[in-house]
Length: 403
Image (tube, rainbow, N blue to C red; front, side):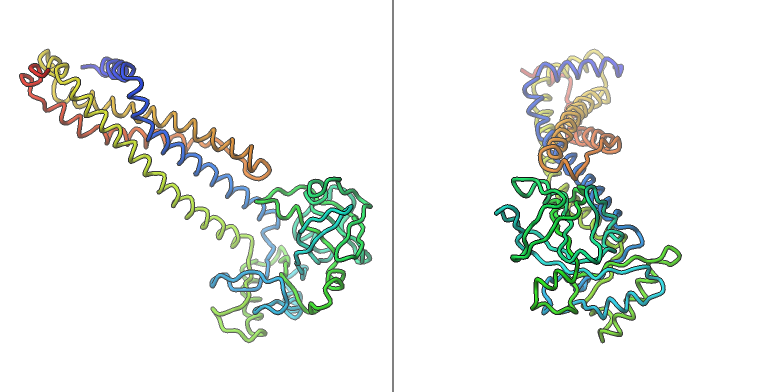
């Protein structure tokens, strides 16, 4: 039997059992759609986060409280264990490989504008903050040392947080103190757009608002390594010096120095594990889909027993029968893959538009398409293998007598 004839025959059989064929591939469709959407959204999320990290620059290092090896987190209050101080800042600044450093304080606080309230992060910094984070001002300017009562706003807190848009020269209140808006940052995007809701003021101004917080306290220190220096080497040297000055043991540090590469590795590893885990769960749908195809192929063998006997009687070999049913089950898998691929990308694009249009950018990946279609064909072929073997081994006489 020629392959073209076999293909036409299997296509005709699938079409004649339209509803059953549709229900057969449903499990494959659901599994493929889930895998495609998870993979696509995962890659989009990873690329978006990496882009945000790269904005900081490859020569930027951040010192945070807590050891990332032991699950440390950044404290916002001076009394927490492992706090960073201005002494750490002086040590970092004194390294010949550090171009400039920025000791930053962060504190959550209520922001008032025209009798409306919005809770956000206050970021106490200096003019170096703009250089370190590559933030771009779209209105006004950044802070200078004379802006004791000046603030720069993230895009979203200026444009979206309040009923009326905040403009340059408008005034806001923080802890009953009045501040004038001197600048507004461009829209960064980001997961949850948290950075776009920050309020930036001078470090000394923030400390004046919180007299109980030590003037020696620092939330994080960001610093830029000179282009002529190796980032990892500077990180190692400063880690050793800070460890010695803080009287801490290697491996038990209460601080972390994190480079952009470290951040990207952490993010990629976490997203990779989560994506793989979820993909493993939804792969169960593919197994269910394969079982569905197998069941349908067994039913097809039973319904077409007499037809198989006739084909064998006129010269069809066991190999022809085996290949006929394998082609049919593989086509069912392929159809499920194509439909699942379509719904997977539609789901991804809808998720982007409805929930993450400012952050995740979905990209069409030929590699994903190729993998999904090949995998679907393999699932269909394997599911149809046993029924196909059974069909090929039917005795001609018994098959012709079958009612």
